Image 1 (spheres, one colour):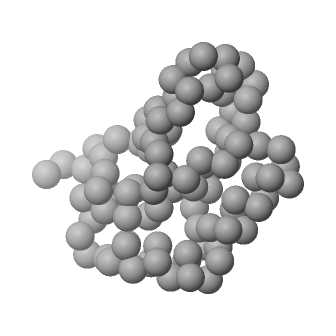
Image 2 (cartoon, rainbow, N blue to C red; image 1 turned 180 degrees about the vertical axis):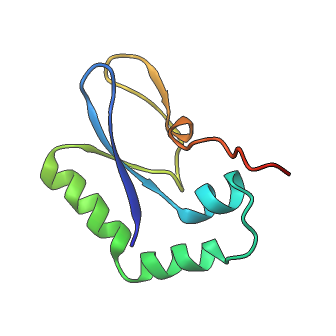
Length: 93
């Protein structure tokens, strides 16, 4: 299942943010035991990302695809860094 987070900015604007698992668990968390990119490809092929995008349209929220952009400028003028929504990796190395 594609991972999507509803984010409400300080100004009230709502975003549906799609997070590829390769970004969260691979790149940022350092998990090399699973092929997260393959899982992301399977989800895309199954149409799961399109479902998330369509649900954003139906609910009146803005869709953000973290594969394509991780920053946006909100209508209120503030820059939003969606990567900051991902908790830091506190795992001891």
